[in-house]
Amino acid sequence: FAYILLAFATRGWMAFPIMVLLASGGIGMPALQAMLSRQVDEERQGQLQGSLAALTSLTSIVGPLLFTAIYA
Image (cartoon, rainbow, N blue to C red; front, side, top):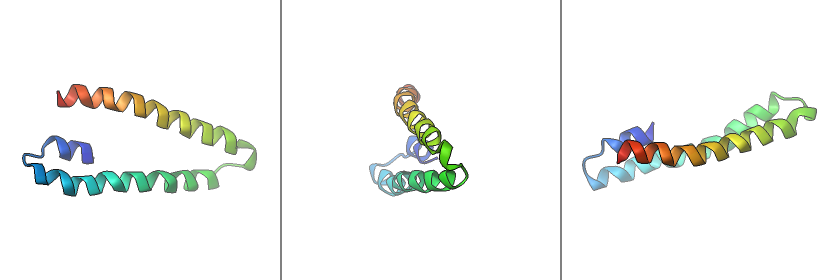
């Protein structure tokens, strides 16, 4: 959501409040991992954490490519 707002920022100062939203996304991921780990049995913890790590890596690759094309 914050990246969409950043696309419509018309002044440089507008980026700073939007960065607060971006930072809150970094706080949310560990909380999401904690909530998901409580929903899974002990035998499946490795599978869950591996899947989350793979998904995070995939979005780290695809995200910049996608948003570069959008913002270019």
